[in-house]
Length: 333
Image (cartoon, rainbow, N blue to C red; front, top):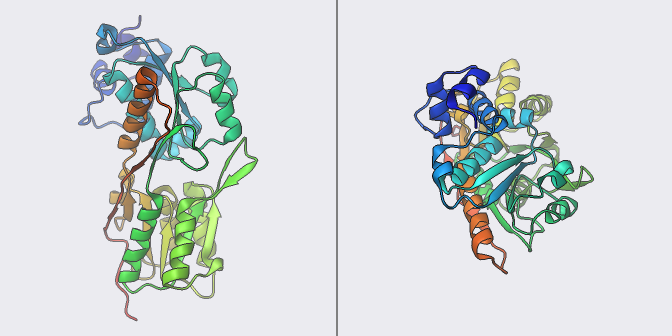
């Protein structure tokens, strides 16, 4: 069995850093990339914490499947936070866990007692998970799942809060920048609840302009590209709701390159409240969600399912809240 020193040597960090990362020390000031490297090295060397080794309840193994690639996860800390919280809860409860690298290789993980899927999975993908275990919890997506437990945030509530805030500041011309995602091996597009809520809100309360809806990937690069295209319009909106903070960072750059000012020329509201949001200039107004609570809740539900069994599927909605900072401004009518 590996030691902390061996992990530190291979990861290229100090023994203290390894110890604090593996014990989820929230006061530790290191990058998410460093944390991930420590966790991956520990897993590679088959390291198990003392708490887990001593636990008498360590009789089950949980598979943790993230639909994002490692590169995507590092670029969007939302899913990384869910995964780390899930792993932390496993350790706290004395459960072993395995990271499932790909749903295509799922049959290599026949020894797991339950699976937590982080992200969005279609019927075809769920079918592959079922071949391994009937104990399945999906975190971040609840559409079309009536058979298994799901955990997500209230996307509609967060979107309405963001748009209501902009409307209260006098904005009526509000654009939307968001992402498109697919399931079932890329064969089926899914409807983003933020986009749906945006369209409904604009139809009901203001004016809906389909030409102000821009969609791409949930990435910094597409946030930049889509905002750049939006700013080329002859009639420019006074505000924009951006469906992820990562995209909002890219949008900031496009606005700055255009020689415009946030919020004097255009107000911006994001979604997620990643750590970087408060350090942007100006600090980003955004909808704060709680990925830690989502990951922990997902594992807790899965543990209950494994230990007690249940014939009733549950859909758990974790709350969110609008955090008002400096990227939005009242306008004169």
